[in-house]
Length: 102
Image 1 (cartoon, rainbow, N blue to C red):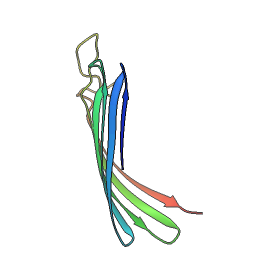
Image 2 (cartoon, helix red, strand yellow; image 1 turned 135 degrees about the horizontal axis):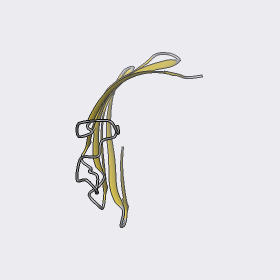
Image 3 (cartoon, rainbow, N blue to C red; image 1 turned 30 degrees about the vertical axis):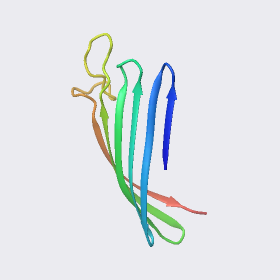
Image 4 (cartoon, rainbow, N blue to C red; image 1 turned 45 degrees about the vertical axis):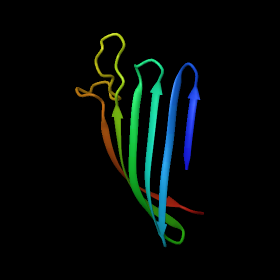
């Protein structure tokens, strides 16, 4: 699955995902990119994960990393997602979720 967006003169973005399924297990890789036409906001995200389907629910594991390449136009410093961060705003998250079908 893939998606591409361009809204002149503001931004360009894309998203792509590959899924491979073997019996009840699905593996996936997702990539996304967002670039504002001014250099203030730019970030990329990569996610990998798997999903295991049971009869009426599924459990999902995901690891995602976001690279924040944007900066504050007034200071020239990096513009982290978390306002008290002391680094460049890059972040890696791990999640586990349980989905129910009813």
